[in-house]
Image (cartoon, rainbow over the protein chains, first blue to last red):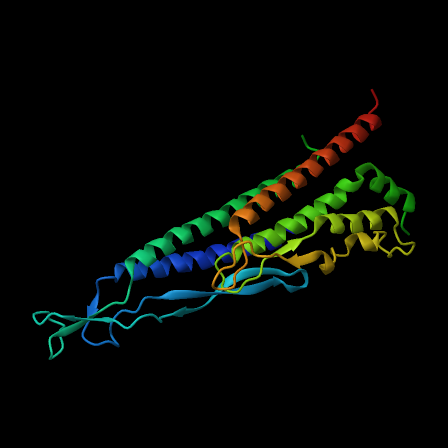
Length: 136
Length: 138
């Protein structure tokens, strides 16, 4: 069993999912951040997953984060004349983070990460039994 | 020079189980790759048709080619399982991003492959024990 491929795939997937978890944390932490202009406002970050070739010959793909995209709806304009960051018209620009979306994403990330941990554990167990073949 | 008798001897005691372990470990690899890409847009899940793959391997083992390489290893036994047994899965519930991985199905398949791998492992161990018992002077 070329277990290296499975460990490689699982490790890549876990790394990618932890990047995703990091961006979610960053998004949630900045859900209430405001800025003085739409450009400075916090934009929700989303990792873009792409398959990587672990063993092209055998059709095995891992996964990696190609980029962190900052697309999404434009920042919300809020009228807060007393705010220290307000522009001359009295507006501040809130982040475009949707906390509900982020929470759902977080659950999905946790599940995916757990799946890969299970895959790794099972593979490790199988490898151990194969290595100990005939010893017990 | 290879010893054809020794080779056919090991082929006979372990029978189909050595091939079965190879096929199921190949399946485990493909499933791991699918689960890893469960959140990748546009990823197409792959599956191994283990019946035809196993049949091909068993056929190779029972009809080994006469030419063996210099290391004495049956060359055909080490060639990878053919790509022709790998196919794309049909999505049971198509998703908007074009991903065809169904995680619950992959999990079930992973459990199945790992159990079958272990079953073959047990059988090989049993045969090894039997051979050792036969060799040991009482």
